[in-house]
Length: 520
Image 1: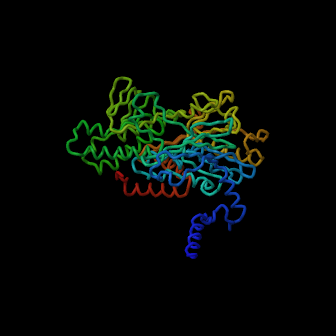
Image 2: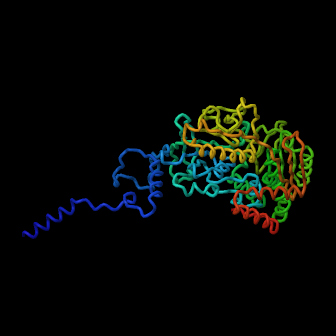
């Protein structure tokens, strides 16, 4: 039986021997150029992880049963062989214009935002009624700055900023997750060499009860989608048998609070939608639908007096009811004004201006008048090294002697363009690293010159006010020529040629075939 004992020993040896190691992609000699591979590995080493030992495979719960996964990764400081890192908080006008102009041969760019696109806000009101499709006004961040999608040291993180540790050059972030079957949010840290705060602003509610619960703001694409769904739903419900006359009148009453450019443009688009589309395709309820615009003072207060009077006439002519008053309370089906007047509504759009967000207020940074982040003439946060603030979240500190700039897209865009050039100059002079660049010549400070204002009123009418200030002199136009200028100007300002093509095609399609009234 010697052969049987030999076979037994061989079987036991085979069971006790470890299996052969499979080649690891990090140990395998790469076939790509050595420089590219080393750059990728260096970038991967920036992500630090926890040191706790991993549990055995059989002890781990199945992935679909793990409701609270443990995440310990941070994006650590840049090393000596890497490019300095610019972290941009926000993907609005200011942040995206900065990323578009930053020199990615000097810096790595990391963007942190709860949305992965920029919204072309001047055309957002047109999407609510189907004049434009929603994707026509959304530009992905990866198209604005391709390095975020291509370079190993540049990233986009779908996350919210939760705090800033300026002393340690670190940003605390939390992931954005949505839906019942997605992982719970987790926090992580990002180290920066230069930090640009472009967090924008949030809609002002003035502490009025019920605004956040019942009104819809018009600042994001999902707001426009909700307005469109609500408007078309009310049109359908009002035609269902059993709906009383009073309920029809309420469902089809669209109330807009705020007589600024956004409120006026939405009212104009909505009245045009009613006149051209609803009256033809919803004949049973065409006499019930109406629009009311509520403003505490004069509409379009920043425009020329002659243009304001023209806008009032045109809106009234197109069926918009103008009401002067202050909202005191918002209930699920009506609003109450300061004079006791009750206004029932089926759709309530809130557009009363913007102010600092709760996050901006909570940051331990110098503040400008009104609660914005305080900056100097070079857009640096006062007395905080390597931190800049641009857009609606920033304002000049009192020591500069400059007024706080208005929350306009053109202000944010030009600040982003200026700061991109400034950071490029600092980086070329060798000051891109954290706590460096103090001796670099910053050049001329930021100076803002107002280029004018525009607003559409619907029905091929618009306003163009090219004065640099309310008291200044300049060209002001109204009517069809202004509408043509308005469309031409914004068509050229749309960021990509792809979206310019989308916008032009949507405008042409709407003009020929009317607006799409499908509720999707």
